[in-house]
Image (cartoon, rainbow, N blue to C red; front, side):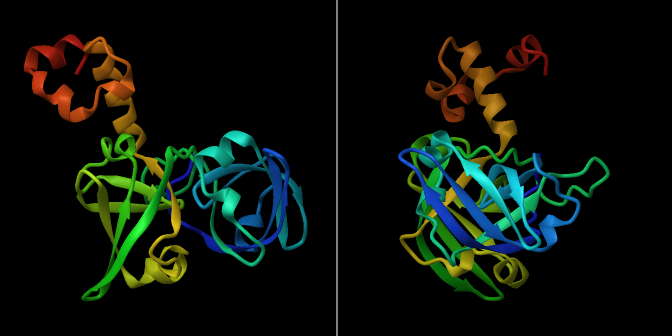
Length: 223
C-alpha cells in the first residue's frame, strides 16, 4: 500500500521493451534506502516489484496488464518519474490509501496559474469520472491530490508550489497522458451498490445508485 506522498523524482535510465512487456531501469537515491529485491516501489503511481538493484538504481519488470492500463509504455530514457516506497507499518499516513493499481489514464487538458497555485484540468474516461467526487482524493501519476471540481468530461486539481517542485505533474504539458487511480473506498461502495441493484459494478454509477438511497437501504447492507 502507498499513500500518494512522492518521496523523490527518479530518472529513467533504460527501457527494454518486449512485444507486450519489458523491463525498466530507474535511477534513484532515497527510495533505495532499506529496499530489497522483491519490494514494491510505485513508479508514477504504478506498483512495480524490484527485481535488480544497483548502487543508484533499480530494475523492475513491466507486464502487459500494466502497459495496457498505464502510461509507462510511453516512458523514454531521461524522463522523470515519481517514486514512493510501500508504506511501512509504523509510517505516517500523509495522503490517502493508494494501491498502486492504475484504473486507467487521463490527458492533461489545461494548466493555469491560480494565485499561489496551479490549476490542472484533466480529461478522463466516464468510468473513472463516475468515481471522482469534489473534495475527494485521487492519485495522479502517484501523487495524492484533492479534487477541486469534476464535470461530465474532466476534473480539476490544484497544486501548491511545494507539490509542483517535488513531483513531475507541472513538468508535463497539455496533451500529456497521466496515470489515474480512483479512491479505493469509492470502488467498494460502487461494487456494493451495484450488487444491491442487481447490476455489475461498472453499470451502477454512484449517481444512479443514490436515487434509491434510504435509511432502510443502508441498514439492510450493514451501514
